[in-house]
Amino acid sequence: MRLLTYLLAFALVLGAAQARPLLVWTPFDGPAYATLERDVSAFAELFDVPVELERHDLADVLQRLRSGADGAPVPDAIVGMPHEQAADVAASGLLRDLSGLATDAFLDDLAPSARIAFEADGALVGLPLSVAGPALLYDRARIDAPPATYDAWVELAERLADADPDVDGLTFDAENLYFAFGWLATHGGYLFGEGPDGRLRTDDVGLDSDGAVRGVRALRALRFEHGQIPSGTDYARATSRFRSGAAAMTIDGPWAVAPARRAGVDVGVAPLPPLADGTPWTGFMTVDGVVVPSAGATGTEIANLVKWLVRSEAQGDYAAEAERVPASRSAGSSDRVGPEIRGFAVALHDARPIPTVPEMGRVWGPVERALQRILDDPESDVRAELERAARTVRGE
Image (cartoon, rainbow, N blue to C red; front, side, top):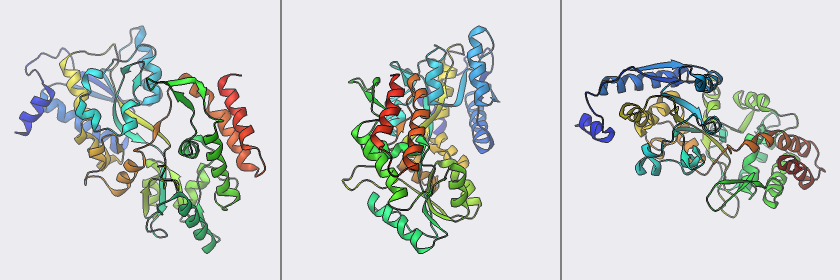
């Protein structure tokens, strides 16, 4: 019965000749690669379609994919392509539109932002497999559960630090836009506006909007009004403090859980609490997925392989065995995955994909320099600093 279900779902034409093995590239390593290897083997055995799997670093994948335009061999599918790189490659016409493979059931099961991460000029250039982004990591030995509101959360950080001068209540790399964006976005700021069609408008830069100013002022208040995020805290210091038990809370991504756990921290994961008015917390997210090069194989076999690789069950395997957060909501909430993965799945539900427009390359440096100046000086003019960054992004 299970085999019949697969055959109906994938509409495989049994007995169709396969001229050569399908070639799959991936930057995955460790448990993620082992999970993919097993999944590919299961597909090949179940559907009698030979598949070869090769591992390449992401930079190598991108270089080889682009060189394929000159006649060099290219894969038939790439597993684990970040959405930002996929958009860049798709702009060169090197990826196939997969809109016809994304069923309504598949799309409805995705986290909202994951649905749009691989959209490029009206095409769907990849199918989401996993998501990543910042969430609140906390030490369960010190905190049972985060408070229900942002203000109560800040008060908790203060109490924890006051109770033990050797312990940070909260520490994270606040000068890094990847982590700080949550303050801008949740308070109403934005990087680029959106048009009626949902596409980003790069002529509408919101870094100096009222919401962005409010958010960065709240971020600075953590240091100068609430005594959190000590001066000089970068990513290395923040992770070291949390793993050593010298910080009760930090803000980090899924990759940070296992090292902290190995260091002896009983890690909890949760969304940052909503604002007092109920506004849910939102921040950045990246989405990894499966893409199909335009020069690769066509036909039923590659279509079935792509759908097989992103199905909810496969995403659950990555979550359970490689601690990757599923893009599938049903996989992310299942009993198969651990509480940390479920925590990230909830935390990233309202996150926003990092913009894939070329203008995003002008954002990181100016904004992070502005954050550094703002967080170094309690008297700095937040609006003026953000206006300066916005002018740079606009090319003024």
